Image 1 (cartoon, rainbow, N blue to C red):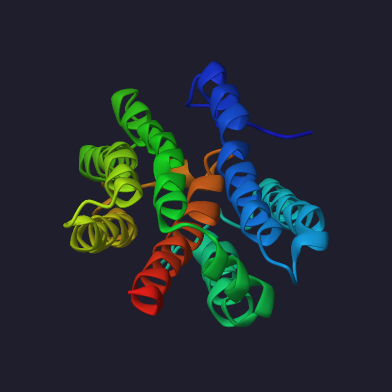
Image 2 (cartoon, rainbow, N blue to C red):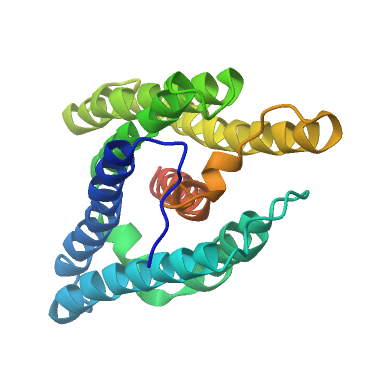
Length: 241
């Protein structure tokens, strides 16, 4: 039986579980769109979408089982949840996926505006603010992560619009936006590590809530996936400019 975080209202956990699959389906659907416009991949576009969805669903099932078995419970640096989830996923995405021919073809085919607008899913980062407001996350990471994600998500709509209509500043704006979004996720991860260190040394509040189900999906899924998406935008920017 799955155990939910006891110090977080159940309705918040359920709402999070409802919305967390959204970015997975958005990423998979965008990949399908890129594949469908390619002569080489068109016939496989549906399979590519399904493969991405299944990969992430199996991955999140693994994260769930690992969390229920207590793999993430020990307070240490770096956090065990990063060792068992985020680091391996990021390595897989950057070393394996980034070198796959279908990935490279999809990046070539997709409009840059679509790749930017995809980041609207980062509105899910508002859960950082929610967790801070109910007292289970420190103010520093709640505000840094929550506000940073919301700004990145909302501004992605204007940046995508500027690209679409051919604004003369669109290229530079996209670089600035993409750099901000990448720095935001890196800063969030660094803040989590600092808070973990302080928690170990002084007993102050850390980010233990992010190791509990279902919010363990945030560190397990978000940093690696978002970093890879921002690097993909850079790839598109500097190979088509």
